[in-house]
Length: 355
Image (cartoon, rainbow, N blue to C red; front, side):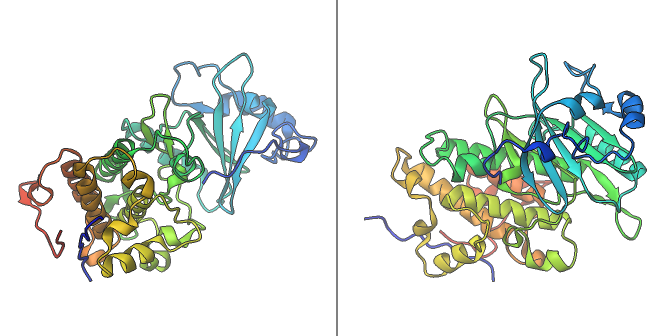
């Protein structure tokens, strides 16, 4: 019988379906992009599409995207996401069509170029982009291994999501976000330089490369998530795209990794906190992890990652920074005593958590 472990806290891709003719880029209405003058757009498209990653994509043209068969992956109030099958055996692409008309073309282009200059191995780079008065498109390489949401919640028999894999996701994603928060700067409402957050961090926006390395996608394409359980409730009304909101969303991802439960349509944070208050911490963990071959050290790591997650979803005044969260996850991953990890010369302290 498993013993109680006390943790005391401080006070999506949907199934892809073929599009019908009205949803294809090359549909009877010309395209989902709704170019008002197809002939003039086609004439200037080749020079309008800006390719940032030229390895294998140097000849990519906007008209290629218009003519290629497309499959709707998901559609929201902010944007639609398509998988585009290129001809000639070229790798598939993902095209994000952004509907936000409040951002000017100049602002959009500056944002994408800043992202291109701030690269990390665990952040999916933009392949190309296009902007006009009618359209704003962002092009990525298609990742065939799918998203964290799909592997974790829609493919429960897949043994790839063992504890080692989940811990690698936690470490890689927190490292990528920490780097972006420290490197990618923008001007806040007061005109001062501030870190630019992801803005829509969730399991469906974490993809896997061909080598199964986690890749954070859609960084900086700020969209208010339809799933409010993924966000800090105070941030929804105040500053939904702050770095503190990213930390909260990261904490939710940690909880999904630990529990195996999705946060969509379910207040996962509240459920975990209620179970922890009853001192039945082990009950929150995914049974497939506890029933597997994971050793006692792995179970201790689960408890410690849970502590980090709870700190990420705590009130903003007590919340970790992304750099602190990344360092603490590294401490768990490296089996270093959790509260003796140094960051910038400072020693992390327990701050109210006990095992």
